[in-house]
Amino acid sequence: MQVALRIAYDGKEFHGFQRQENASTVQGVLEEAVGEVNGGGTTIRAAGRTDAGVHAFGQIACFWPRVRVPMDRWPMALNRLLPNGIWVHEARAVPADFHPIRSAICKHYRYRIRRDYTGMPFLGNFAWHLVEPLDIERMQRTLELLRGKCDFGAFQVSGRPVASTVRTMYHAGLREDKRGLSIDFVADGFLYKMVRSIVGTLVEVGRGRMGRSEVESAMRARDRSLMGPTAPPHGLYLVSVHYPTPSRGIIDEG
Amino acid sequence: MQVALRIAYDGKEFHGFQRQENASTVQGVLEEAVGEVNGGGTTIRAAGRTDAGVHAFGQIACFWPRVRVPMDRWPMALNRLLPNGIWVHEARAVPADFHPIRSAICKHYRYRIRRDYTGMPFLGNFAWHLVEPLDIERMQRTLELLRGKCDFGAFQVSGRPVASTVRTMYHAGLREDKRGLSIDFVADGFLYKMVRSIVGTLVEVGRGRMGRSEVESAMRARDRSLMGPTAPPHGLYLVSVHYPTPSRGIIDEG
Image 1 (cartoon, chains in turn green, purple):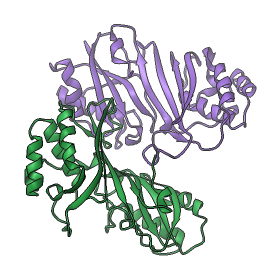
Image 2 (cartoon, one colour):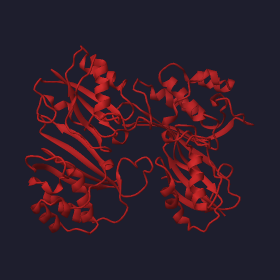
Image 3 (tube, chains in turn red, brown):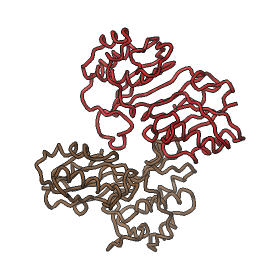
Image 4 (cartoon, one colour):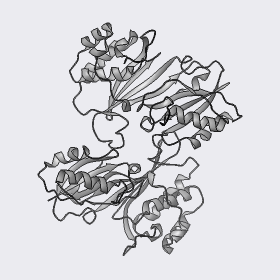
């Protein structure tokens, strides 16, 4: 039996997820805290290696416990040891064959854009600030291209080769409220910097610099260079990771 | 004619308001930025010297301009120079005899208490987290003691002697919502650490460790040692400072 943790973190406080020498990373501080309770070095495996600056509400990380700690004590035991900027919200027992990536049905990412400076300076690291006019209608229509089973090769930043660039997007939606824009993506998997590439492209569409048909043909051509720039990391949140029951409970941020 | 700025800042990013050698303070970074635009050392005067860790939505700071900058350009000119954690929202011309403290009619402070850990780690530095039970009803009734013209000497932390400890509290209210508690105070003036002393005492009342009548007699005795501990600074916000028209426009955070 493994322990799966649901974790939130402020991306600004870490040099990305993956363990590094001489830099504070999410994996690094987690492995250190878990190791301290567990009585020795412990490797954790997570559902997604978020880039530097990217936030999480519901990252999932699991490990093998070597000590008897009641499941509901794990969060506070770890929160006491963890630095500012990261918080364990829940711990849950998951089966031995649970794998945070391979067992997942889908992941939910959200990108936040603020349309004015009212929340500054408090939101400076928590959204992309874009005060210029954007054609939301055009952005909405372009987003339709990304629903269902698609080849997202044109939204992949090179560097991490994958066998296939086809993913199924279960939900791709843009909401506007008084605080700005929230763009939500739920898919069975995401390519490297895919969400930020999509958002950067959508913003170009909103600015009138690209059209829906150009995005459509760039997708067909699988050409990253025809798409817009990569949106900055600090607007991006890993909201949740969904698993089949019975481990489903750890994932809903609500 | 002076320039008055409405400023927001994240108290965690600074060593308090007041200029210090070898430490980043709100006054220090503001005077540096204003001085850079103004072409030389410029002193700013503010409506309140908030302590280390205390936040502001609507701090007011004024200075004498020595260069011709259109009033609506001041905010962005300064925001470009200021570090993370501080933001100038508005600049407004105020008369030569304007004084950010002496011209003020009243100031509005808010103290935030979170009742659970749902917003962690993002709200760790932006509210006092108190997950134990609190008797809100008792806290409400005790707050009634603090309305109107009162001697707040019992809520003053020694260190800054003042001629009189009598202040007029125009509003003292506690609201509970799903995010936690907001305790608002609007008064014609505040003593040193007065809001945090009141909140620390109210929490003792909510915990059942003090009663309303004890608070009442401690107020009459003007004895700080009979009150509760000082609440931590990171739950406190200077919301706004109110001035008579025509400088009124700079103050409403809305």
